[in-house]
Length: 133
Image 1 (tube, rainbow, N blue to C red):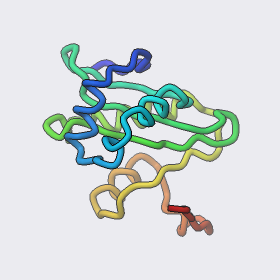
Image 2: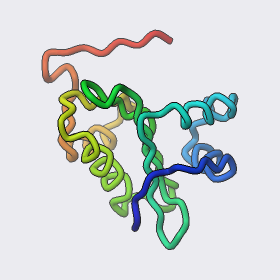
Image 3: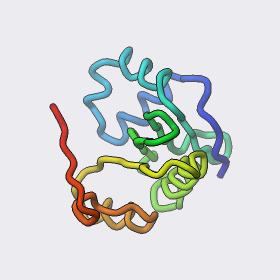
Image 4: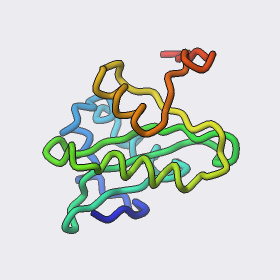
């Protein structure tokens, strides 16, 4: 597996990835998704045998906060350490940033995954999260 900057946006492969993950809200406005990629703080991609396996996208200022906006791995490539490698690579880019946050579906599997990477639930550290939808 190789992880590198995702510097050249390929709408076809990104839409295939988001579609395979069931993230249909992004597919309703593909121009906005492209702008999101272009305006991200960092986007990394994992490749296996030259084929896109997954992507992680972060937003923020890179000095005081980084927010992991998206982490996707093709379903047939999951459970191979790709997601973990992407998270570690992204976190490694920002060693002095104290707040690296994310929001995820509330499932036992995702909770275990993120906890295994050192993330803590906000409620466990005296914080609460809020979202305007």
